[in-house]
Image 1 (cartoon, rainbow over the protein chains, first blue to last red):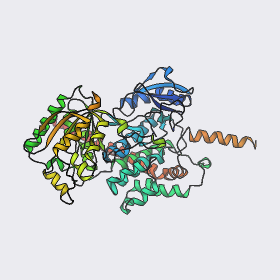
Image 2: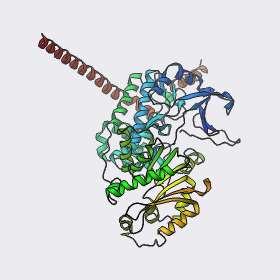
Image 3: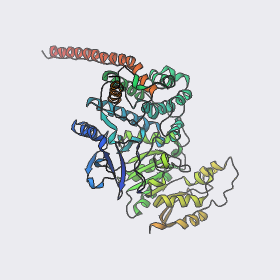
Length: 467
Length: 73
């Protein structure tokens, strides 16, 4: 599993599951140390032309070799500085389309690597990140010299990290991508097999790579691979990759209409929506210094993310509804948008640190703070639907951003009334005055503009601690 | 020779499985060997089918060219 930042204490070794090297940071720059054990594979990667081919195809992160004085341990062979990734995301934060793109990118890399007599020694979904809207491999040390005979070492990992979750999302429920959150090393195939409906047995690839594969895992559990006399030819390996590629390419997800993905059509008039866009653009123009990175929290299908990202600003477009994120991603692909990253996350239950010592994946907070947060039409959902006290919303936002554009939706708004339809109104403090008082403790309110006659108000605020 | 055999076997196995830090899983390892024949056959059919289609398309294209030539003459 890929880990981006190593702990900078002097007592413990930098963490990596792969002895070939590890990632570390110095002065906010990310480096990768390559250990001597990987020397021959690295030289082959470069001299064979595979590195140039993959980088040229936007499938591998480009890097430059850095000064050896940065070496962290005596086993260092080289230090490389990969291009920076603006925002590290994880498979459980991706929609179906993103996981599918990442899976196809992994298989394409393996296919090209085999042409150069190299092979992927791991196929972790965590080794893939989105840069300029495209998935690419960030672990340069994943490629090793290929020797004909043994099967693909990373086959099980590929099935557990990509094929099983995609099949579950396609055949059972898109929300099952959250299993990635529980199973950091991939979704166990026996679990996937038991959750998949019987019609999935009609698909040859799922039948073979999930159902029969999981049964073979049980059957041969006590056997050693060292006694195997059978070999796998390169042709058979190419056939296996092709079969997986075909299976995943054919996975298509039909979206069901979701409350959120239809949400933008609902509130108020077209004029009000247009007016809101104009205000957001005006408030964004007031942000000083100009933001380099924006998080749009509760972005729905990313309409406002597109508005702010038009200026070339890298925007992470976060929503908790799968179909909204899927629609957002499809739109990004269609219009080739490079600086928007759709992300599936519930801000009331955001990603926390996970894995060994909770350090293998970073929490949302650790991936911030960001220059600007857009929190449009989200506050009432967090406060009223999820019962999060307004004060805690403000204190969290202060930790996450320098500047904030936030929308206050009053209680008489049709959307808030809809939320209160099935419950008792216990939110006596949910007023504009209370909102300004609470947020005023953490932010300096610099501007406020009403969205026409809707009663909604947009605020531009600056974090008190950023002054 | 008796002593040498396990050593040789160990070295040979290391070459076979390469330098892998993840556990490929015995079941997954053996399963790939078992399905290699099936996916290999499917792949071979696919490749030959592509070739046949290509051949058919070529003859179709050359046929059209002949037609065009006749028209021109």
